[in-house]
Image: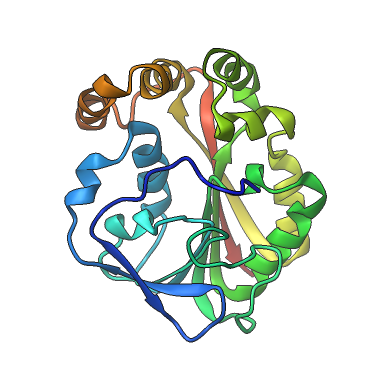
Length: 234
């Protein structure tokens, strides 16, 4: 995974010790940071949050815990390599410690040889629900084009490592005892323009992101940018 994330942490979120190594409890002090999310991050967090009910939740690889901005009623915990010192492939918590485990834009940043280990750990920790959200293989050409234009380090891993194969992910989750549902979401076309501005014209990005969030958070699409997998323990 990336040694240091280029994502800027959202203000108003506090990480406090949870008593479990590598895992912090997330406290949202204020929600002003919700308006400062980039459009691409907003839509993937919103789509994930819509699948979650009030519960004890572990967000794996969530960096600053921004998903908590969308989930007022959850006992929210975070594991992340950079911010909490956790490892998605080896998590200290006990089996089924959480009602729900989420991993948003995480699987594609794990070495393909270690992805099954991460899936097994996430599955082990949830008593009810596992939610995964990642750029799907339909977006591969757009990812390659974006890397050429921006040399963005996040996109670089999207290109240098294969994006997750959803058929494979579903098969493994079924083998681990989960029933799965796959949902496609978010416009690749909008992402191309938004992400280009985000990287090359950062001084204009905030205004563009705010407009897109207000008017185009759920725009129709021909090909999806993301796959959202909701898995429920049988």
